[in-house]
Length: 355
Image (cartoon, rainbow, N blue to C red):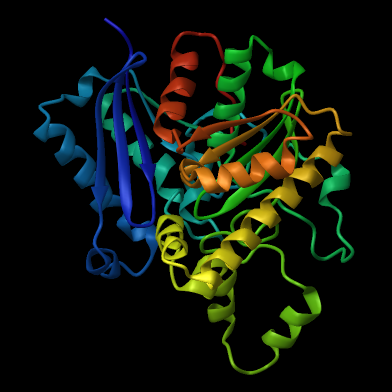
């Protein structure tokens, strides 16, 4: 009998769950949430009991008894900055998840894990949340002291893909230098230096390449002019930055596949905007090469956009001179969560304490 682990990954319009017996997947389900269902809740945190009920119903329909679980692990939320690793969900973390200043569905991950784990009589964990902070001090400082750089990024997938690549190459992650570009709705490009992410952009609402629905870095003076133009509210501008920028702002869609279809039909504007996005990703990869002093063992491209060969071919052509480019398409977040739970259950890693 192996360790049975339930992994939970809540997103804005879905809740993904996976049930594993050791490394063997038993069940993977995407519970999709309609806009009208989400709209009935005044805030994301109010969706907690509803989503828990959906998860438990899905497990019952598959005739799985949660008492068989050895652990439950959820996607980490936007809590205080912490080093990478596996953390047991404790009362302090639950409080911070419920009261997080930044609102995102990932804040439900640890709370859902804790509630279901309590029902099953086991422990709950999170791993490598989006607020993992291992940045060098020099990477935090900007030209305005009141506006430091903050890492908010795809830490779970970044770390998992980096370790996977090192394992396949026969390397040790803690002795390797890698650049990992996660390309999804947001795009994060990180410098992994001997086991630490020493520099990375804020892929939610901060800086870096523009993405399918995020604005990325914006010329400061132009943004200030827009802010004081009187045409937009504070909330509208925040949405432009975090969910209505990038491809959405230019082309009205966050689907790279749709953009590729338009290009195939001769849409030159779509081609120009997609090329610009890829150009900005390539520039960010180059910047991370400088952060690693040019000593780069490999460049890894991951996330949903990595399924699109024209994008990965562009980046390989632009950045291949830095180091070999390897593509690992997809998010693989549920698998990464389970892997983190298993190393704790097997005693290979001691879970960290969130304090």
